[in-house]
Length: 103
Image (cartoon, rainbow, N blue to C red; front, side):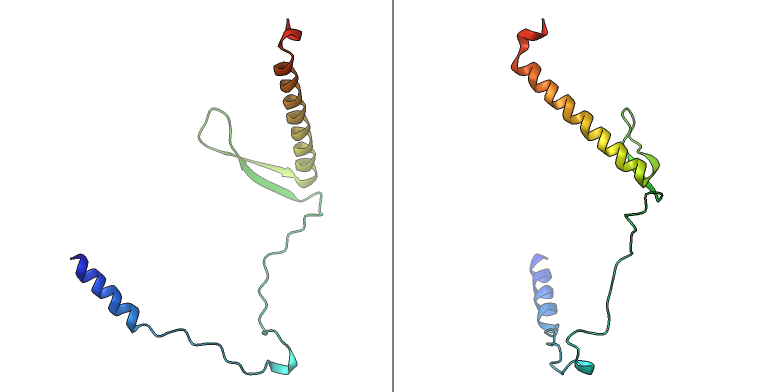
């Protein structure tokens, strides 16, 4: 059974033609690039009033909650969260280094 699968794979691999190299014809109208340009969607990150929605994990449940914020408010919330986390981390290090001061 395995031998038959290997033989079939070998036959299919030999039957597929090799990829043809692209034509080396000169580019149209003297340009060195193709005429098709693919771009992604444009996001306006500079608009502070844009509504941004994201799913956030809620403690005690498996289901994320979708919260929507104005971009300006979201940036401010992230800044406050980072500051509080940094402060808590620095405070925790001081307590570990000086456990006698806790008494």
